[in-house]
Image: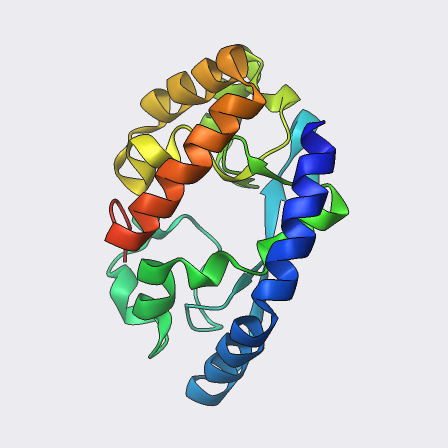
Length: 186
């Protein structure tokens, strides 16, 4: 049921967002050197690595680490990077990962391949059994501001409570947070 919901919603969203996706891709290309998409190595279900696309909001010479680990992360942003991140438009290409089955609309956010502490804690809690999501319970409860143990606790809570109704609640909460630009790091 969840996979069918993801497919139908991703197809509908892809059709509705086709023009904005093309416009954002062009804006990224015209405002900075490099490709429009950044393909990030992420940890998926069963700790399998997959390539997750995002619109590139940072320069091509940015180290491949979590933003909070960079010294002066704002110096790596492209001219439209702050706007893409605050509006969450950088996340739109992840519809491809949802269609492909690497991601779902709702689940724990996929860890970077080198976030060993996050991966280990999620594995201990059984969260690695879930398909990662475009949004999740941790995202609507703090997003980038949460320490890793708290993120994992919320991911584990999602694992216990998951249902279509809970997913719809998280999607609604995400929509509201994106409109308000709550909890978004630079």
